Image (cartoon, rainbow, N blue to C red; front, side, top):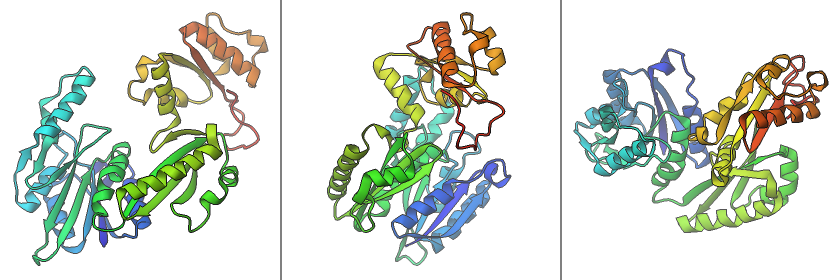
Length: 369
């Protein structure tokens, strides 16, 4: 099978944003034995998108499209697919209900323009989006020779929506009729890559079924499980057994699964226990509070925080610590965290002190928290 990946968006062609989706998708396809022969990036121009779709259908067996599924006038993917196949856009009532329910859940009125996200080229199949309002589109388009078809999956351009959709809905369709392949990821924190491999032992050995790989990104270790079998149930059984073995060996180092980041898990735990958090950051530029507030619903459990230089943090804390005794060390972080907790009246407070004179890259000096 020969694949092609198309990224749509003027923000990509003018250099405003970098297309990381195509690289990620190529890696995922290679893992299941599918080679990618073309990467194409197109601006938000309907005629050019339609022309590219027509070309791609004739030269590739599988086309993965990212971007252009939003509700705005420059989101043209669904319209281009309809024009390419010479079909009309038709409303899918079930998708419409899901989109309306998402707005109701947020206590917001759905703009009329979002209705377009529930419309699909006739003969196509909606792909459910578990993480956003834009469903994907699945199509099987006959080629001009009349003997073969091209598989097309259009997905959102937002990576946090695209990646789960690919794993949960696109990959099973692509591998339909062949041996089933399933992936699972386990995310760990507080342990290094080499130590993780040591603790897992033979679980990561070459040739094992299912295969377990280890990757490190910043402070997070991700275990990627790849299972193959004749049926979905067989794959899931293999993954479940390996999950259990990994849980036994890594225990508390595991904090989440699939796309869960530390901030998502923190907010989930606060929500479950109906507890609150506040923060104080010195020298981070507000990175911690930024990541926390990016989580949907964070405002219910994150009371707020202070971003300041250590020398200025005292005026923000009415009952602050003794300025003369606070320094860039663990004891200083504890004092500021206690004062922050009192100021915001939260169940928990987290303080991070980064000495502006130390390097982020120095492995021997880390921020105090």
